[in-house]
Image (cartoon, rainbow, N blue to C red; front, side, top):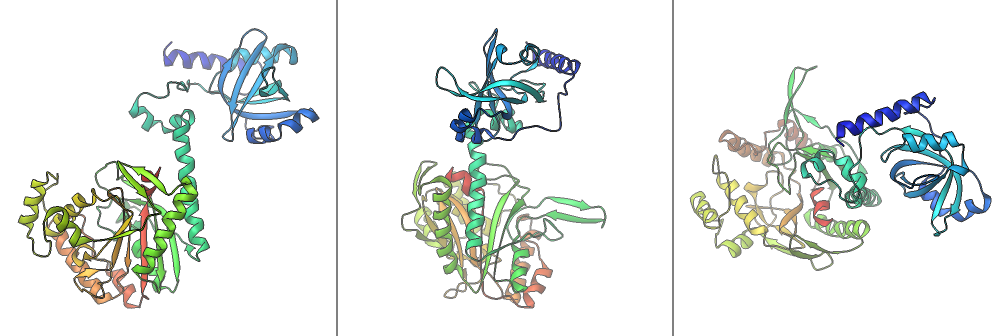
Amino acid sequence: MSEADLRAERIRKLEALKAAGFDGYPATTDAHLTHADFARDFDTLVQKENQVTLVGRIMAKRGQGGIMFVDIVDGTGKSQAVFQKDDMAEAVFALFADTSDIGDFVQISGTAFLTKRGEKSLKATDWKMLAKSLLPLPSEHFGIQDEELKLRERYLAMLIDPETRGIVERRSRFWNVIRAYYLEHGFMEVETPVLETTPGGADARPFATHHNALDLDVYLRISPELWLKRLMVAGFQKVFEIGRIFRNEGMSIEHLQDYTQMEFYWAYADYFDGMKLVEKLYKHVAMNTFGTLQFKIRGFDVDLDKEWIMYDFTDTIKKETGVDIKSATLKDIEAKLRELKFEYDSKGLNLTRAIDMLWKYCRKKISGPGFLINVPVFLEPLAKRNRKDNDLVERFQVLLAGSEMGKGFSELNDPIDQAGRFADQAKLREAGDEEAQMNDTDFVEALEHGMPPTCGFGFSERLFSFLI
């Protein structure tokens, strides 16, 4: 039977419901218990013989003649309802048998009882339709075989696949654990603008759009960083934001165009303070979301409870590739990238991007956990220069399973140095580097009013996707 035929048959059933005087999509229900409540209080409900009303979606319907067994779910659990012709008006029983389908949302009233097989059930005495489904659900057993359909109609995968549904639930717990952690440590949650006239805070290509009311071209933010630092200028000591960011770049297993990111800013702290807090945070989140500190990720055995190693940027690249980035030319690095069979786009390539690509090759060999430190100043326009080496910055990145799982630094609060870094980035953009940062003069002006020493850090939901 084709989907069109199935839909036509369900519409016929909907019309039969209407002909019997029932609404196929009523606005209210009489439910007073969830399925979780029904399971928890089952023994008491049996003893008191109280009338119980449950609601949910029909996920299974079996039986024939004078008895039917129906499984319904409501998001808190699953219950079985038993329809027997002898327990209800014959017309009510017949209407259910003739007009209900798997996928329908229904309300079922009755009393709690144990079946002969000892299964906790609801002996139905009445029912009503809450929402008639016009299209059939995929089989729970076979699931959705078409991968494209699975991604496009994600709601169906969540409905029938416990693993997919579990990911959604764990993701919610993941962010709630993070939110609670920061609140408990004295951070204030804030929201910053999504539309910007000058996108900044990261090396990424923005989405452009147009503000009709102001007749102004604007961008979707690539990071909330520069807005959050303005709050440091405003006198707040600890802030964080969990929100969406947008980057108009290629898609891969590690990158999407829009995703959720968390960033915190902590006045009167530096990157050493940040590393201590972040290590504790990651362990706390892993244990409270997944119940473990040990993970197998992309062929790596990652133990967050091990000592976190410090990886020096220049030394690591030299160890893995033999290239000393302090003296290497663009030509040298391109030759090494070709030797390593590292795929890259040579169009508009500059020394900064080439060194970053060389690092990306090296990081794939690092299991972590650890922190990447001592990055050259030309790779990070927003970090404070290293107090021991002016050519480096006080930046740290979490390394896990061959990837970067968060970045932070002692924030650059010198407005003169910041203006010079933005000028250098502007030159890169003029030379064709679309990921170089724009010159945000408004942010420099904010810094000129004074920003205290500050540690900032951010990570995205990629961390969740690696740990899951």
